[in-house]
Amino acid sequence: MFKGSMAALVTPFKNGSVDEKAIERLVEFHIENRTSALVPCGTTGESATISYEEHDRVIELVIKFAKGRIPVIAGTGSNSTEEAIMMTRHARKAGADGSLQVSPYYNRPTQKGLYLHFKAIAEAVDIPIILYNIASRTGVNIEPETIARLAEIKNIVGVKEASGSLDQMSRIISLCPKNFTLLSGDDSLTLPIMSIGGRGVISVVANIVPRDVVDMVDFFEKGKNEEARRLHYRLLGLTKALFIETNPIPVKTAMGLMKMIDPELRLPLCEMLPENKEKLVKALKDYKLI
Image 1 (cartoon, rainbow, N blue to C red):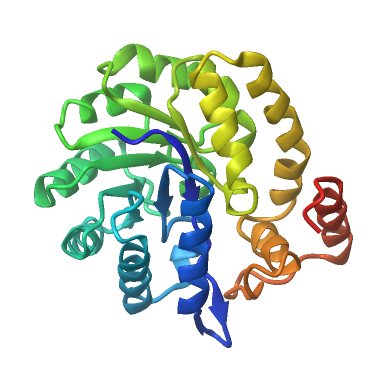
Image 2: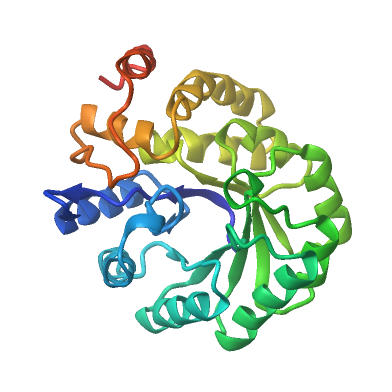
């Protein structure tokens, strides 16, 4: 259902508030560059530090500005099942095409608890759901066997995998139905993941070079492996620089340097260390972005 290069959108701020004009510019930027879908209010969108009102508003704005020209997959996950259902209901009412559901963080549920959490959301809201597995952020891994059980639920259609384990991802593909979609959650692993059966990426680097990510995925899908590899290696240095500090600090800094948005962050995220910013600036110059 969802495939290709999907952008994990930043949430631009200006003077402490959501910058609505910048959101409109970003949506148009991605449509012009053939991004496959937009994913607001995920990790890259600083979902942990925006209010419920801001969260709802950002999703509404992205849908409004997209005007049906590009799918919108709203980040509506929470470590509270009831909160996740509440936010997902809002996203569906606003017109979202799907929902990205991160595994519950901090409370570290068992595999049974994970299954019941996602099942409850899927049953409460009739919208396509992509699971988001990122144990480095949440403290718990969704095991392939649990994902396979969840894949039996009709509106759980895929998983964004950020475990970093190609072994785990291979097991997911082998255990799940053929129409269940595996997406990369790590920009540097997009091409390797596609080589084992993945269908694309929910990408951070696509915030600044969307066309290159789109082309890499398209080249691989069309069997143009050498062209895909060339872009993979071209993107590698830039991707490394965008994760030199906690995401989305570097990507918002980069977008500020590129005059795309104000590079404003919400505490506890803060300005980059000078030595790391120098490395980021070098990577942007090497890529001829500044």
